Image (tube, rainbow, N blue to C red; front, side):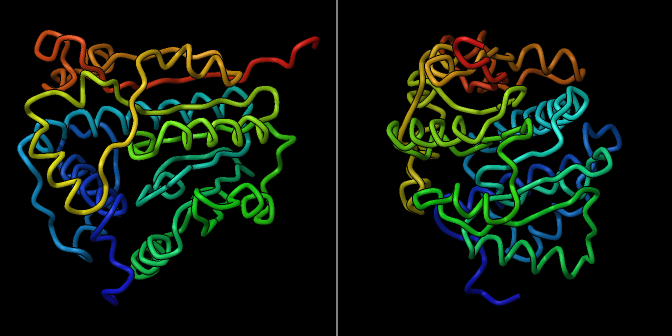
Length: 281
């Protein structure tokens, strides 16, 4: 593996940390999901030591993965026949989930990270279980044009996932991202996101995390206090799914940094939404 495409800095570095959590979960006999490729990404880069908060948050990374897995299955059952992973990172859902026949999945991320990902998956001879298209594009540029050029059909209901990204973007960039997604979303489309509130950023357990993120150029830039109202202003009807509910649903302990009994009003939001019908329809 050549070193110039390894995701060792910036937000791309966090993709490896999430892959570590997925690899650890995959090795458990009672795993909540299978990801046979996560360890290959970690092996190609080397294990990244994380702060104590990163270890405390591993349970959250696992529960959110299972939550979004189940959300994709439900979206496909509801009629979505294409999906877009916004800032896909080292996500392997195109390979590890069972998709309906003819399902199309688009992954958008930076060219360097996508090149690394394709190289590792190529060594593993991984075969997707859907029609997968990698879109090499910067979210700061005209990614909708790149997505359309890759064959995305804006007339079809779409399942959009924004996982582990929004806190790294400025508020205006998040609004612009949602505006663009809305313009590409046909009736029946669905959206799932992860974000944080201000209280979460102020947790004392996260001080070392903030310092490490700053050093690699991946500081958090935004928060949201009411994700349902925010998404509503962009044309979506949204519901927050608490980690307490996900933990109970999957027979796992509530992750320490998302447990209201321990962190009070601090929240790491997991949200699912549906596209509102156009006015007058």
